[in-house]
Length: 371
Ligand code: TRP
Image (cartoon, rainbow, N blue to C red; front, side, top):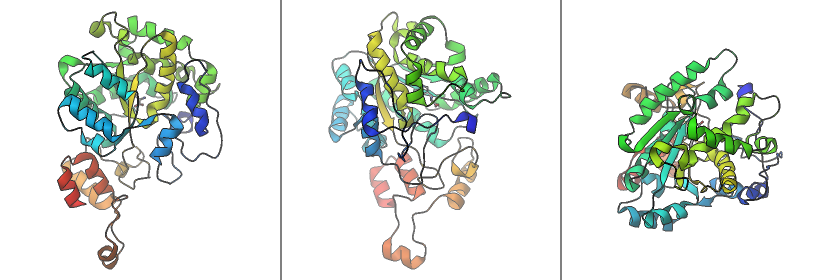
């Protein structure tokens, strides 16, 4: 995997903050000694230690979702906020308040999310942003655009032998799974980069590219001179759907409809960059709402990966296979012996089956009872 993993981004907490300053260049210094390395390409770092999400909020310069946000969302939507919000699974944001203000004033906004099609089988963790986006679309009744980044995966995962068509095919397979989440067909636009790039969308890509320097790319994404140049051109392509005039068939010429982007926290570097560029282009900065990582079956800090099929539950697994994976492979927080279990009880924080229930069992009382 060496060629797919750029140098890791390691930043000192204070050095990540200038990103929010509109006029300064975004340059993040690499520095040894930070054990929480989280970026779009390394995925979950891990030194084996639990991720400190509060520290991550501070380091990235985003903000925590607070109880008063939940109250406000409940008031505005007239329904209990999604359990991903109630349980802190979506835990961080940028400018969520501005989007709620927009909604309160009866003005339009839209949702943007995406998927990098790296294989034909998606697993449960991949579904989180889509399940949450579906809730947001229903609760706020807004348009949604979903970007399928077949180009990104070709640049980052493909070796010389993997052909682009393969990633395009994965994208089509993944779209089937994404559609199954139940988005409103009238209000949802799903596109692949290789299929859609052109016209107004490409004009935005070009404008964005003009505002991204090599220093920024190196600092934010850890790419360097020996990487293929696709990796350098790509971040502008993930930025472009943040702006409403990239989609003239939905928004006409309007460039002022703001968006909010549900995403895993590892995607934040793209949108820190995008917010900086938005200011320069006089577009609204995209808002963000970030989720924690979905734990591997093998333990809350283990890495979920294609290399070990027992580390994740795939959407293609049968109920029988899922049962077997959970019973045979899921990390248990139970005591080592019967006596220990009776004396101390289970450690639910590390018990993967219980953790999975926090993601997928909506009923708070039932969850508490099982706990
Ligand atoms: N880079 C993301 C991935 O690898 C795909 C993506 C594109 C995305 N646009 C997005 C994810 C917006 C979240 C929000 O999966």
